[in-house]
Image (cartoon, rainbow, N blue to C red; front, side):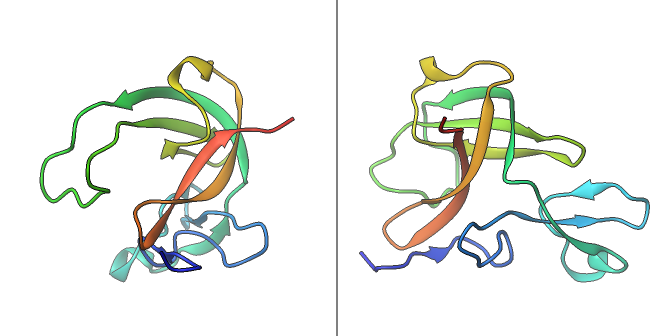
Length: 130
């Protein structure tokens, strides 16, 4: 495995000691994630999203998604949820560093960069450490 995993896609999070997701602020003031691309990005301001939020909803993915799924092999179930970044946006995300039974509605969550497979990393949230 490489020392540093490549991001699963470009421009999802900042390249800082404490990275944050990169969203966009539309001309209307609405915050979106991910940052739009192509013509959809016209007039959109880069927006560094909060690193902390609250758990809004969750589930466990127990079966391999259909094509074009390109995840780790063999498939391992994973947690998936929505984290509300107050005043910004609700982010669909992987949830890491816990098990399903640890999760509670409204619990504090924090952003992390997590391994996706042997060569790539992805964004995720985990329960906030006290």
